[in-house]
Image 1 (cartoon, helix red, strand yellow):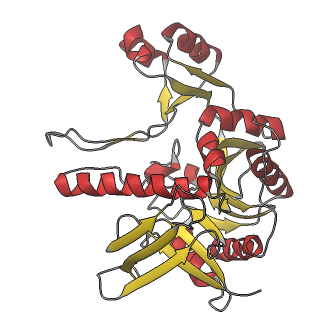
Image 2: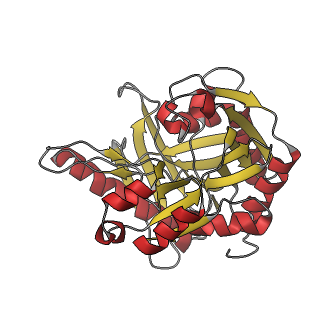
Length: 350
C-alpha cells in the first residue's frame, strides 16, 4: 500500500483525534487536519463546472497549543484524498462576544463546505453524513436497538401531561431525559449560565406541581428506570469493541446519571461479553455506522439493557493511562478502510 491521505475534519486539540492519529503508521497514512476553529489561512475551491478538481489548502498550528509551528497542507479531491473522517462533535456551544460570533459563522460555513465536498464529489467518508443525522434521533436509536435484539426500557415520548401521569402510575420508578438538547446556552445579557440537562426522576409530586402547559412546552423521553448493578460504555468499530465498566451505583452523585460523577474513580476496563459484541455489531450494521459509542446497563439480575448510541461519543478520558485499546482499535479499522475495506450500508432505516 502506498501513502494514503486521511483528511480529518475536527478539532486539533481533540484528544480522541490525537490519540488515534498517533497510532496510525506514519509511513502509510498522512493525517491532514481540517480544524475550522484553528485555521490561520484556508484556500478552498469547489468548482461547479466539470473538468476542474476541488482544492483544499489549509494552514493551522501543527499541533495543539500555541501557534509555534504552522502546518501547510494542500490536496486535490478526489485524486489525492483517500478518505475523510467527519468527527461530528458540535463545534461551538457558547457564544459570548463578537469574536465568538465570527468563529461560529466561519466554523458552520466550513462544516457546510466539507459536507458539500463529500456529497458533490462522492468522497469516501465515515461516519457518513446521512447515517449520523439519522442516528442522532434517540427514538430511531430505540427502534433500531429493539430490532437487533437489545432489551430496551419501557419508554414514552410525550408532552401530554395525562399520558405522562398514566405512564408514571404504571411504573414504580420513571426517569426523564431530553430528546436532543443536553445544553441550553446562557442568556445573551449575561444574567445566567449555561444549563446542563441530565437524567432526572419523575414522581407523582412533580406532576402535581406543574400544569399541562409546562409539559406541553417540550416533549421528552420518559422511561421505566432500570435497577442498575453497573453501567457500560462500549466503543465499537465494525465487529470489534472495547468496554469500560462504570460503577455508578458506588457513587452518591452518579447513581441516576453517571455524568454527575464523571471525575470520580468509577471506571474500569472490562472484557466485553459475547452478547455485547454481537448486539453492538448488529446495531452498527443496521445503522450504517462504521463506529459508535454505546451506553448500556447491566441490571441486578445480570440482564443487559440499551440506553443509547452516540455516533461520535466520548471515550478519551478513559484512556489517559494505559495502552489505549480504543485508539489502537480505531487505528486498525481506519487503516482497513483506507486499504479498501467495504463501507457499512444500511440494512433498514429502523
